[in-house]
Length: 233
Image 1 (tube, one colour):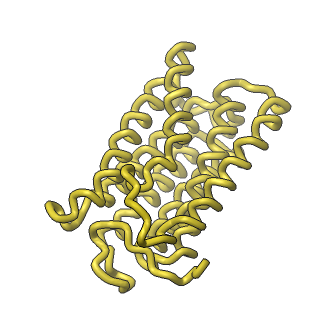
Image 2: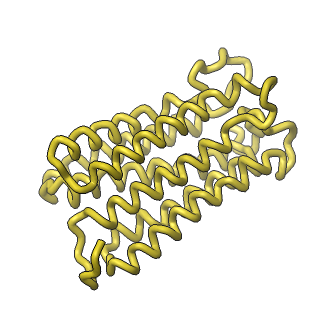
C-alpha cells in the first residue's frame, strides 16, 4: 500500500491541497466540543473512573484524526481517522455492558476479545481498501456499510434499555436517531455532488459529534460508576 497516496471520495475535495476540504475539516470541532461537554459534566458529577475519561479523550482524538484525513487525505490519515472511532466503539460497548448492563467483569472479559478483534479487523480492512482501487465499482452506500455494527449495537442497547426501563433509555434512543440521520447524510454525499458541490459529509461530522456527546452524557449520568461527589444528575 502507498501510504502517501491521495484519497478523493467526498464532494468538497477539488484537489490535493491541505485545505481542499475546509468545511469537512473544520466541522470536526464538533467532536472536540463533545469531549469538552463530557469533561465538564464528569467534573461536575465527580466522575473519576478511568474508563469515563478514556472515552472523553477518545472523543477529542476522533476529531483530530478526522481533521487529519480531511486535510492530508492519504492512506495513513485514513488510518488515523478510523482507528480512534473503532477504539471508542469497542471501549464504549464493553463499558456499557459492564457499568450500565451490570454484566460481570469475567463475562465482559470473555466478550471483549471478540469486540476488540472485530474493531482491529475493521480498521485494518478499511486501511487496506479505502480509495485503494479508483477503477472499482462505486459502493452504493459510499462506505457507510462499515458502520453497520455500530448502528446494530446502538439499536440493541436502545431496545434493551427501554425494555428494562433504564434511565439511559432516552439518551440512547436520541443518540441512535441522530446516528441514523448522520449515516444518511454520509451516504448521500457522493451522489449529490452536481447538485450540492459542498456535499453533505460535513453534516456527518456535526451530527456524529452530537451523537458522541449524547452517549458520553448518558454514560456519565446513568452508569454505575464510582463518584467523588454526590451532586444531583
